Amino acid sequence: MNLSKIDLLNKRFSKRFRGYCRTEVDQLLQEAAEAIGDLSEDKKELHRRIADLEASLAEHKQREETLRDTLMTTQRMIDDLKANARREAQLIIDEAQAKAEAILNRAHLRLAQLHEDITELKRQRTQFEVKLRSLLDAHLRMLEMENQDQEQLEALESKLKFFKKAK
Image: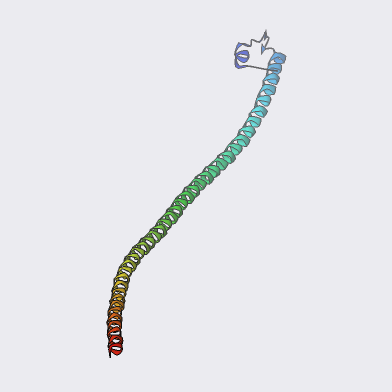
């Protein structure tokens, strides 16, 4: 039975010889007791449900906090990993640039050395050509002198033959 506050306040009992009708009052008390008992059980059940829900809420809050902490830790780890990866990438790039510079420097040095070698070879070729011309000129002069000597010798021989025949 649902007994409300208004029902209790508006309830009127019939009058009897010694006051209110005892059966009506007993009946109302019985109904009120049942209503209070039902309300008390409902209240206990609601308190139990509230306690269960609060425990569940606390557990969910704890899980949420754990998840938040885990996410923050994960985010920090990811940030650290990114920073480390950037540093390593920069180190690799710097190292590659240093190696490339060293290779370029060696190539430039080698090129300069090759230019010097080419210049030296050209100088040596020019010297060789000058010496060869000088040697060839000397041999040519020797041949010309030998030819002159030969001509003089032949001229002398022909004079000698002429004198031998003339004698």
